[in-house]
Amino acid sequence: MATRCLFTLLTLTFVYSAILAQQTKPCEPCDPSKCPLTSDKECLAGLTLDRCGCCQVCAQRESELCNHPDIPASKQYEACGENLQCKIRADTRGAPREARCECNDQVEMCGSDGKTYRNYCHLMESSRLAKIEQKPLIKVFKRKPCDSAPEITLPPVSVSNKTGSNVFLTCEAAGVPLPVVEWVYTAPNGKQIVYPTDDDRISTLVRGGPNAHVLTSWLQIQSLQNNDQGSYTCVASNALGKVERSCTVSVETSREL
Image 1 (cartoon, helix red, strand yellow):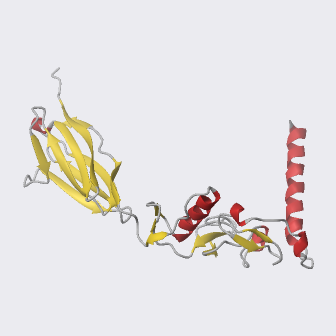
Image 2: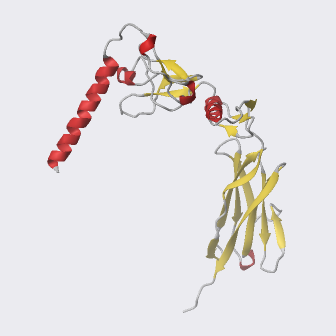
């Protein structure tokens, strides 16, 4: 076992040394005829010149490690692709410094395919992939997220507690435009109440986040009572639709010894 581990270590050391030697050796006079053929179809971030400025190679994609002049060890990586910039990360916290490709245009965008992309580089990469798959190219439809029907990303969870206690129900919803959230209580006998109401004991609170297209709603029941038992439904709606998810609130009965 020890011999096998030593052999593996020596092999990895040899491979790393070979790669490092290849990357740090002086550039030879450029002869384009000796360059390997690299097709733009193979490169989702486009083409760039190698470190010697001679042959075309695939550029680094978003979030990939890249060649930065202030980090000598990064010479083994290629340059970033179109609309990308190689930036040194500031959150390494004592680890060796590294640089990764970041998109120059970080605005969320709606593509011509009806999908929302986190930024322009994400859209362009998806468009190149569509071209490879012989699908229509994806273009910028508008520089903001596509309109979408509501989606409940964090549904409320059923709760069981004693009388007199406080109960909190949480519901997180997403959509464009931002949905409106309300709570519907259904009693065991079928009677329904839509919250918020003027009842100070049962209140609701809404807060935006964690991003611009998501909101969180809470329903609080103070001093839980037996007649609070039943189903509580979180209803999220906007101009494109409505979605709902339900949970139950139960009151625990204490047993006399």
